[in-house]
Length: 108
Image (cartoon, rainbow, N blue to C red; front, side, top):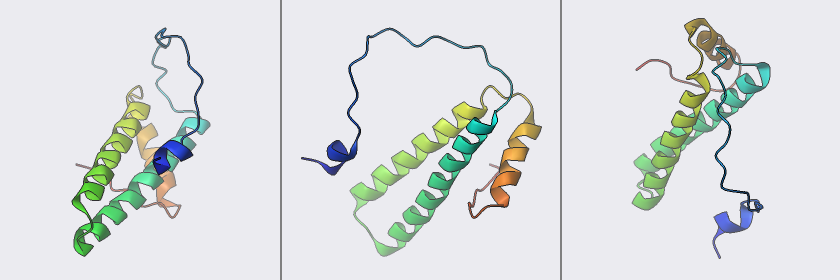
């Protein structure tokens, strides 16, 4: 038995119907901003762990999985802001992150 199987919540089987498509709304509500900040916190901490593990010579398989997880975190964060056309909204979220203990790198 794997730890991930034990900790993962059990899901009930759903029908194979695709989820309904929503029209992009062009803004992030407060809940979405909070969720985005939590994802950014995960990403920031995971970046620190990857850097530490790289210098310590931790198992390559663990590093690979951590980097893959980081990639998926960034994709998820990108999906939050994909519908937002206005860069000022994204800058507001980054500004909120600066006032917390969450460290996020902006830019290319």
